[in-house]
Amino acid sequence: MSKPTSADALQMAENFSADGTPQNAEIWSGGHINTSFRITFSENTPPRRYLLQRINAHVFPQGNLIMENIRRVTLHVFGMLQSTGVQNMERHFLSLVPTKQGGFCVQDADGHFWRMYPWVEGTQTKLQVETTGQANSAAFAFGDFLRLTADLTHPPLHTILPDFHHTPKRLQALQEAVQSNPKNRLDSAADALALVEELTPDACILQTLLDQKQLPWRPVHNDTKISNVLFDATNQEALCVVDLDTVMPGSALHDFGDMARSMATRTPEDGRNENGDWVEAKVDTELFAAVCHGFLQGAGDSLAALEKQHLLLSAQALATELGARFLMDYLLGDTYFGITRPQQNLERAQTQLGIAKEFLQRKEELEKVAFMG
Ligand code: GN1
Ligand code: MG
Picture 1 (cartoon, rainbow, N blue to C red):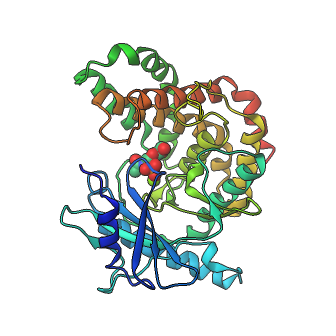
Picture 2: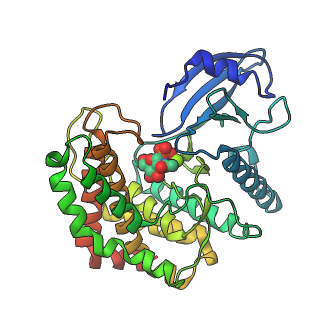
């Protein structure tokens, strides 16, 4: 699949009803799947900026359903925030820019959907948590998102990617990749595969509780990593959660677990710091406490008692699941998650599995921290 260029993005931006003419397009890195550009429109003082995104049609074949979900969720959140008198609304939720044809997305000749949001000025995104305050505030924002969207159930949101966080199915898919072994990479993956085996029994408990309907199903974000939060650049407060592509019915514990594996650590997602040095996978107790407390506070009484009791288990499950997904992609030849260096998916897997192991080994100590919320 070829990547769109800045020239493609500028041409695409013409389709949206924004002020002025698209003048400059910079590629905006961040996600592993979609392609994003920051577009500056001229004839405005100061120049107005937007985020233009191409939804990857191979991963998301039903881009139109994603857009229906996003439209519904953003309108609903807007209404909720408005009714509580939130100030500077445009900094607290995403709003889709309409197209000149009257919809909210445009499909290109290759079948990919494109959409555009106003750029929220004065904000920052982070690949990693720097302070406990940021972890607490980001976790509050994701918890609050669950609370704000809890009643979007009639009809349910579209299921964009079925079984997205079905951990046993993800682990099964990894075993199938091991069997097919198309790139002969089993030797380098051996240690990670052994770790998956060790983590598997505990990682599957969450799905059993969901299958038994002990845990509820509800609208959830499904991709609650730190880089999906906009922070106020001045006071470092989390303003708004972004990347709503996978918002669909799921478990609040999927959101918590994914957040904990991403925010309760100082280890980069792929295990390499900015100098390229390897950083051991570690869970940071204070960050974990900040994530638990922020999430519980943000979600408020929209969480069931049993959900609150399984925070740590979900962190273990989601870290194992993502480790297995990265490992599977490594074995299959890096076709799903974008990479910038050859072993990146293997190192992402090793890191996530290392984090899962930390959650498992330090279970008693960390469970106390979670319950103190
Ligand atoms: C992918 O594309 P991005 O960065 O928003 C993935 C998530 C993973 C995440 C890991 C649709 O998200 O599930 O947790 O990478 N999204 C999809 O960084 O598979
Ligand atoms: Mg995403």
